[in-house]
Length: 115
Image 1 (spheres, helix red, strand yellow):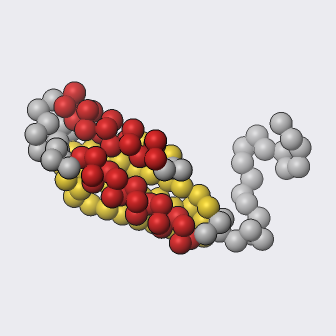
Image 2 (image 1 turned 90 degrees about the vertical axis):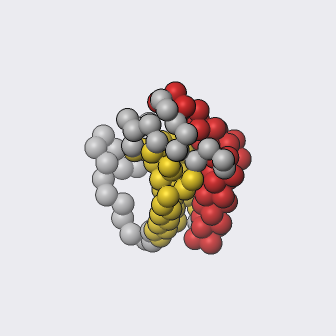
């Protein structure tokens, strides 16, 4: 199992209110969610008008596919916000987990029993 995390920090210089900022963030997130098999959300800088941090996560069996999807997400965000924001920082992390390693127990999980 391979999990990829993309985090983008945006600068929105024309934002004069949280409403201006939310419009840019919403446009980027809506485009990403509609086009790619990822979960995406705003994850930081929520109270600052001119900054926003977005994240997207995907999971697959193939690390190359995870990187490809997240690279395309990054490009889509940059395209969606072009003219109204710029990407200040891009962080990409891809972690692989061996299927043979036992996973940690979750609270409320009873092993083999189905819910």
